[in-house]
Image 1 (cartoon, helix red, strand yellow):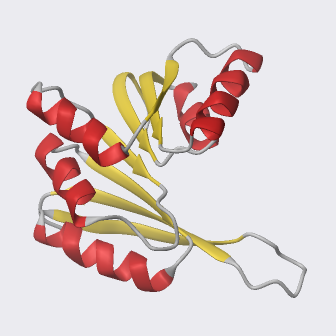
Image 2 (image 1 turned 45 degrees about the vertical axis):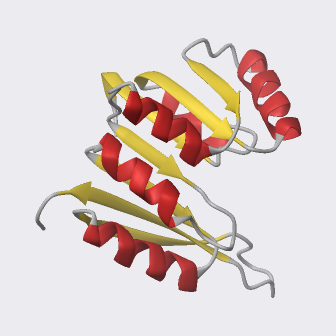
Length: 155
């Protein structure tokens, strides 16, 4: 997911960690987050890390992407890291209208991930890769995040 001209939208970005990692190798990242405190922290994090090709917007990610679609803007990749409840159909519809080549879906809930991947498949995206990540290895805590790469088009 690298390219000097690539544009990424980091939805449900929290404090901006995922978007900042990507910003090192792409043209532009815009992170969108509903929680105003998280957006303030994301801006501080970007400043502390001298990142000038990433910005953060406080607001609903679905509404933000709908606005992009209405303005006929484009995006190469959408990152989505929704809460345990998963994403909304309205959000995923907005993503589909933008027609990114790739979606990176980070999930902490296998049930909502499966539901959302099935919905995105109806929108023309297939899961190319899924990687589980044990968030607390060597402990008794059982928490796995799953990172999925989806691509537009046929398998």
